[in-house]
Length: 476
Image 1 (tube, rainbow, N blue to C red):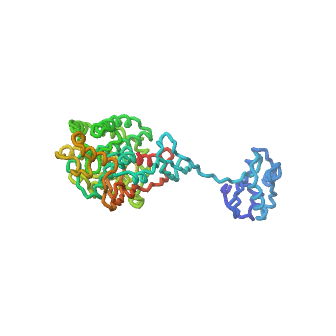
Image 2 (cartoon, rainbow, N blue to C red; image 1 turned 135 degrees about the vertical axis):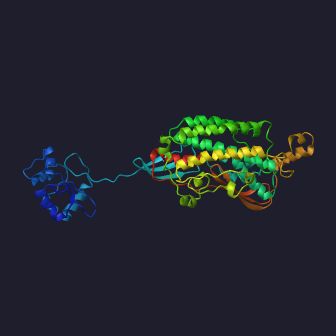
Image 3 (cartoon, rainbow, N blue to C red; image 1 turned 30 degrees about the vertical axis):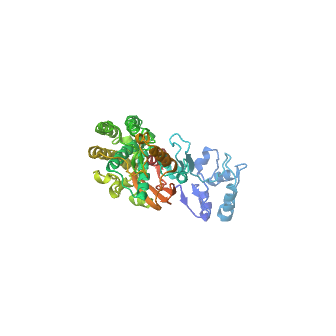
C-alpha cells in the first residue's frame, strides 16, 4: 500500500476513492485540509460498504445534520471549495463530519506586579508557547514616586535621603554618587580619611547587595539554605551601618564635603574580625550552589546576553562583565580611594545566569580585599571639608557659640549655594553604573536632576519557571 499521506491533484481524488480508500489530503488555495479514513477505519464505526466507494458514500450521505458532499463532486474544485467554506462555519457535532482546523494561540501570562516573588517592583507580560517563554516584556515604574522632580524642590542637603531609597540595598553607594556630583560642582576636594571611609562602606554595601542578589536568586529557583546562612552575615553589615550612622538601612552618612562624622571607636576592629571570618561563609555558599547539578541546570544557558548585545543595550556592572567585557568604573575612572587599592575585575564567558552568579561571588571576595586595604591604609585626620559654607558646625561648638547655632539653623533650612553649571558623575554601584546628571543655577536647589539607568532586556526562549530569574537577579 502506498504512503498514507500523499498529496495528489484534485483530478486523481475520484480514482483513489474508488480503488484505494487511503488517507487523502486535499490542498486548496486556502490551505484547508480534509481527512478521508480508509475502509478498515470505517468498519470500526459500522460504516460498512461493499466497496471503498460505498464506505465513503456512507460517510458523506449518512451524517444526518452534517454537511454532505457527493464524491462525484470531488472532481470539481469549485464544489470542494464551497463545501469547505460551509464546513468551516459549522462545528463538529460528534457525527462523521469534518471539524474545522483551528489556530492555536499562545498564552499571555501576567507575572506581577502583585506576585509573591515580584515584590511590587515590576510586571512581566509573558508570552508562552507551552513551557517556553518566547517573549517577556517588562513594565517598570510601579514604584515611581517622582524622586527626580522632588529633588528639584529640595536643597542639596535635603535631597540626600532620597538616594537611600532609590535602591534600598545599595544605600551608601547612591549617596556617594550624589555627593561626588555636588562636590564636583563646588570644586572641592574632601580629606583623605573621608575618601577611605567612603570606599570602606561602599564595599560593605556591595557585599550586602550581592548577598541579597545571590540568595534571593537561589530562593526563587528552590534553594532555601543559602538565604538563611547569608542573611545572618547581612545582619552584621546592618549593625556596622547602625554603629557608624545611627540607621540600619537608610544611613544618610556619606554627604557632600565628606561624611557625617568619624567612625566610632572599636568599629574598625570589628569589621576586620568579620572580614577574616566571612570568606569561610562564601566557601559554604559555593559548596551548596556552585557545583550543585540542580543549580547549574537551572542557571546555565538561561538568560544569555552576548557581549555585542550587552553593549548595544547599554548594560553595565555584572550584566556587562558576565558577558565577557572587562569594564569597571572603579578601575577605568577611579574615584575616592579606589586609585590607591588593588583588586581584580572578574568577567564571565557565556553571559548566562550562572556566569553572573560566579561574578558576584568573586566580586564579594574582591570587596573583602579592598576592605582590608582600607582598614590598613586609612589615615588619621578630618572627615569633613573645612569650609563653614558647605558643612554645618558640630554639636559641641553649637553649645558654646550663638553664631554656630544660627549657622546650623540657616544651613539646614536654606542650604548652601552651588555655582551654576552641569555635571555628570558615574559610579560603579553594585548593580552597575549609577550616574547622576546635575544642573545647578547658582541657588541652593538643583535646577535639574536626572538619574540614568540601563535599558531592560526583553528575554526570549527561557522556560516559564525560570523566566523571572533573569530579571530578579538584576533587580535585587
